[in-house]
Length: 493
Ligand SMILES: *Cc1c(COP(=O)(O)O)cnc(C)c1O
Image (cartoon, rainbow, N blue to C red):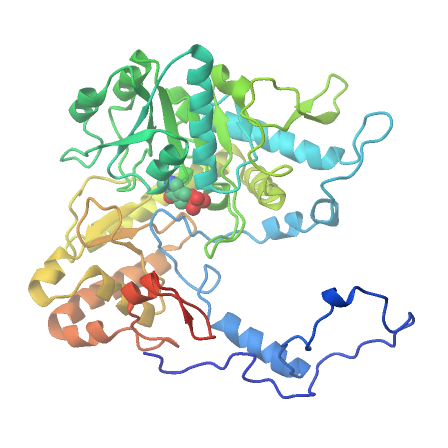
């Protein structure tokens, strides 16, 4: 139900009104164009004054919720505050205005030494942080990094003459893991979690055979739990010449504490737009950089940035065993500049403090909310904790979704709900390292009040949110029959 509809800019259009003055043409009025290419009627554009256009878009932006407007504990998404210095460096003209096809000089030197140096240094720093031998900065999202990683796995097995058909993935994994493995042509075997919330070793052993190409693991997993048997898992997978894949989307959990390469992993992707500070959400540009150990370096995608003996940098395409191109040009360059700035600003000590605070904040919330909500896996967690609304469901038919909608009315972005799938009525809270104790205390107080409201006035939570332009949506219909434009077009699916 729409309570306070906002007019579309087309609704505000008045014929003949305009907000710009076009300079007088100093060229012939109409170039000779093929009539077939000409419009038969004027384009349907909104006709509004400059202040109408300005107010329309500023008001729209004010309806947006972001990390810069409030607390955003969306589990597994690492919606941390992003330092504005990153925006400053990414928008430097020497980076932002470069054309990807800038020519090489006749001497063979490129005109973009500085830009290449940033790529080279970022690649080296990420390798050091993760204990990997080399990185590709090309993948454009975490999921794209996963696909690249699984393609690297496949290239390794092809080169060794291994015929492998399946990839093992725990049931708590992010949905992109099985999707990436399947797109790369593997069958996916889901491994259940044990009573401690981590992957069950016996269930893994039952699936272990020569068909296993590798294991994709998030560690700490989506419950925020570190798997204490990680060395045993690595040994088991390596015993059948499988490869260990580390989903490091949320590396803020372990940054500066342990390195996937030293734990025994062979491939790892990092979400630079989560861990290394780029504003994200809403589908903005990302980067899923992928690191590999020695035995996989030859398969990395092209191009790579190499440092020549004279200290200059060059793009290298000479990698005969490469999996080839996986993205145009050099990845999402501005995201890489932000990651480089972030790493250089923090330095090794700062990076260690990232994980210290991420873990401390999550455990503070875990402890404080334990009396009010069920916590199926109550151990000390890493960067996030997963509560369940089962108690509220039993007591007063209040579900995780009702708590989430109630939070919106309190000015807080809801946590991730109904994920991971192994927790019923899940509420997955990732406070991130950038929030103060005061912000966490406000959130905790709000969650306690909502638990109270669930008991005393469940009807008000069933009605929430009431403060938003659009109230409770029919989410099933919205997903199955999306209205994609205000033209009466609805999908049949
Ligand atoms: C976010 C996330 C991904 C996917 O990253 P995208 O950039 O959204 O494609 C994969 N794994 C985990 C654990 C994540 O949190």
